[in-house]
Length: 94
Image 1: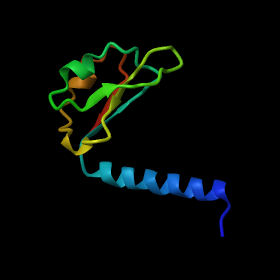
Image 2: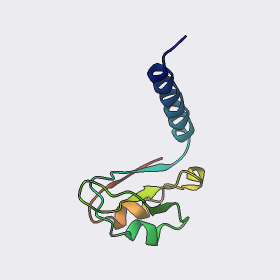
Image 3: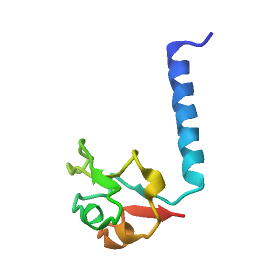
Image 4: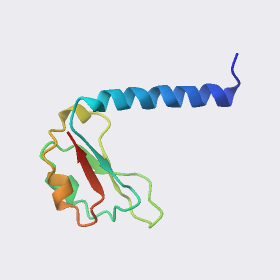
């Protein structure tokens, strides 16, 4: 019915929509991986330990912080991570 590229794109869109719907009712953060310079203050100060180091580097050569995919519903939106980030790479949504 669909070729492989179309099927892959449809699965990507469906998964993206699921994530958007999941995050729409709870606090969450978005980390701009290209702005992050890997100071890891956000990791050290997150009271729920929901931020980790990336295994891949960004275009600046740093291994940026990443919001955990395993327990995003645990985020309270306290904004500690965003306040501690010297690069203003973190946005908090409630």
